Image 1: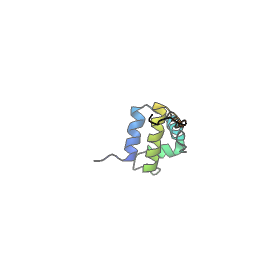
Image 2 (image 1 turned 90 degrees about the vertical axis):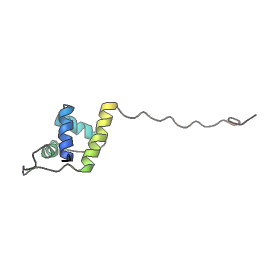
Image 3 (image 1 turned 45 degrees about the horizontal axis):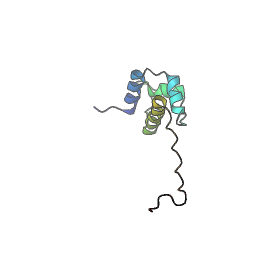
Image 4 (image 1 turned 180 degrees about the vertical axis):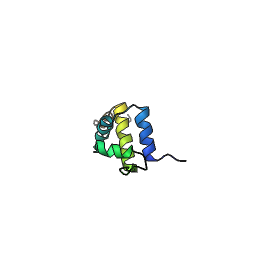
Length: 91
């Protein structure tokens, strides 16, 4: 039996001991807005009337935010150096 996106979200929340407000902040790191009520619907049992399926986009944005949350933002790449006249030429 394959895991659904909802199952993956539930397992990550438990394994990383994340609260709903922390998940909201993690999603905001990648400019993805989610409310606590939306999270509650994702974490509900499938038979509940307010259950909401976790889509691929939601899970992808959460995982991208989680990388930033755990590792920090990517460092800025240095600008390419301009060659000075005569630099790199064989003599």
